[in-house]
Image (cartoon, rainbow, N blue to C red; front, side, top):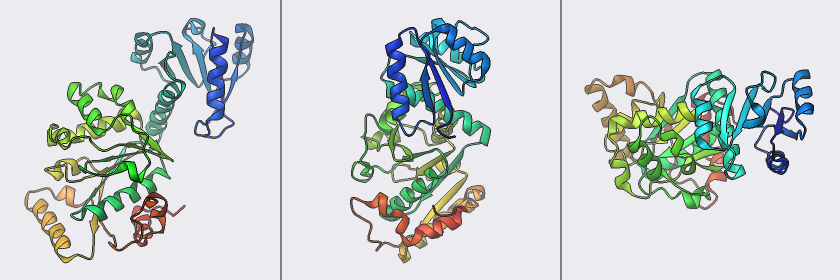
Length: 334
């Protein structure tokens, strides 16, 4: 989707509409050029002659007028309950958004609907897990997979390592974190996705949920519910890919693995660690979980890579294992 897509804005508050237009046009990550109409008859004339790729219109002016729609129509509502009522209809191409919130939050909500629509058109969610007994090597591989996936589709990265250190790696803009997302899930399994927006941070093309602030918060979720948590986020927020670092916060990792489409197993040159991986795979087969073992893809990660510094994210594509990862994933390096 390019910048030749047109977003038409109309609101009874002309100043509000113009501010919204400026925010859209100044944001390089939003694939629309916005233009504002200040008179209803001019808006109607435009919409009768051509279809807007996106129409953002205040609820009063929308008025269920048959002509006042776009390929996607975003109704700017005065109250949250009015937006919820519109969304409850689940009409194709129609979204209700509460207008009284910071512009960046409003636009993030709109783009989540965009992502959800695109993911539904492309097909189902792909969940990729990363596992291994060398925590540092596994974390390096997890970041590499997350970076690679984010270059080829809208991707969310979640890690279940108790002490990961996102602040030093992704320069995160953390508001909330995995602890808040899991709390929302415990409170309401069906609607929690609406309450985790502030737990999702952004770095370059990647969306991610920062580390849990308390290791016990991960333990509070039943292992068999982890899959529900992951799948619901992907389905409701419209991600094409979710990358999971199955870290030491997960007591029974096979429960998490069961929701993965593929699992990258982190191998190192360490004999004991590799024997542990073989014994782990043997355990799964003995317990009748051969369906999980069948998804394993081994990646050899060198421990002596010179990337353990504050530019680890930028240096990942130059690691010796990155080329192997691209081949295994069936993706050409960018």
